Amino acid sequence: MNRMNWESVWNVLKWVLAVLAAGFVGHFGRVLAEWIVHRRARRTEASSPERYAAGLEKKRVKAQMKLEKKRIKAEAKRRKKEE
Image 1: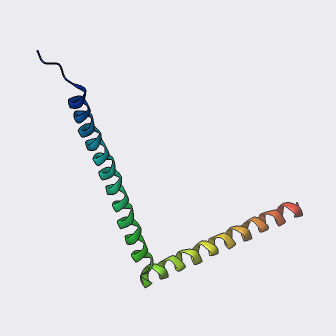
Image 2: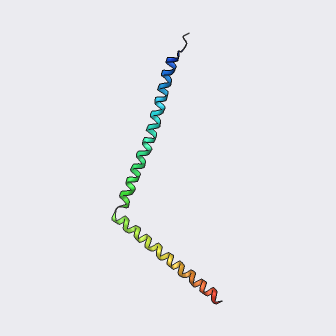
């Protein structure tokens, strides 16, 4: 039987390391590409006028709700103080 020499073992090890490195780079390259696409899509959606107007309307409604809640709380506090 022929024994494996260190040269052939090293050759196999180099290929295994090359395949692992390629897989590592490929995986994180794909994740980076998906992140870039998602970020770009989010920016284009946010820049549309309709989306901007909807965001402003949502903020306005939220502010109104907050003011109403404060008014109700102040009224309850005033009633409690009168008692």
